[in-house]
Image 1 (cartoon, rainbow, N blue to C red):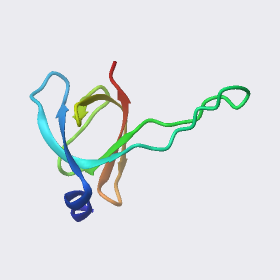
Image 2 (cartoon, rainbow, N blue to C red):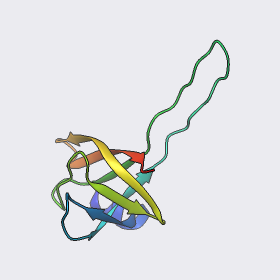
Image 3 (cartoon, one colour):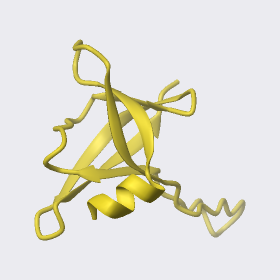
Image 4 (cartoon, rainbow, N blue to C red):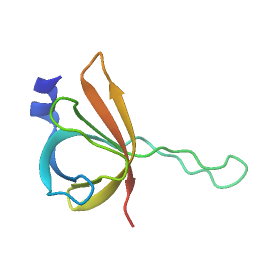
Amino acid sequence: MRRILTRLGEDATLVRGTGTPTTVRGLYIAPYAVIDIGPGGVNGSNPQFAFMSSDFAVAKGDILTRSGVTFTVVVKQPDDPSGITLAELKRAS
């Protein structure tokens, strides 16, 4: 997994709580979203940032900035067998 992140990942900046910004390496995942106007409602999901769990810790409310866009971590989903954590993000307003 580390080789994949090294090759395909990107650097982002993480701020935990009120701490110091840290550069983190991970893979940004922007899921496909569909907006159905009318009886179908709205479908979609939040983007995610995948990273090696052993590299750093992340918590709900932390701030992640990538490509000049700032996100708030809303959910942390560790995947113990793979060693990857998915941080679900919400674009900060």
